Length: 218
Image (spheres, rainbow, N blue to C red):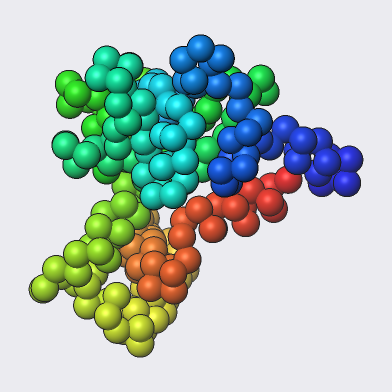
């Protein structure tokens, strides 16, 4: 990317990183509210549209979980406070006019009170990619570390993680060399699983890897 291109990208990137960035937002002069669009960072699906005031966005930045303003109850509310369906915020971005905020989130459950993943129905919330779904499952295993789980065993033992990653890589190479159409996808699946566990054990996220790939694509 050229220097001119980088400058243009910086100019259009209105990411909200701290409370000082909230000064640039165009909160409604009478209500003090701003529209917030919550988007599943993994699938890109729009989950819900809600309202927030400055206090709600400050709480979001401070806690890392989405907070909104309820117009019906006239109070601050943390998404998932009752249901457990919290939304971990990955980033906040203002639109070009500063009167709408895009919240890229990692939802812990359905966004809608009906039980749907999205308030706009199932059609607007496609199932996440299988790799993303697997990564979310591994994150849950990493937090809970259930006894008897193979994933837990790998996460506790770095030597075992690396050993299995090497073994699965060798098995995939063998299948590829033999052009074994039946074994290749199976071995690739095994390798991908162990690669994701190894990344998690090294505290490297999928987003980190995606950022590198996007930079290389440009």
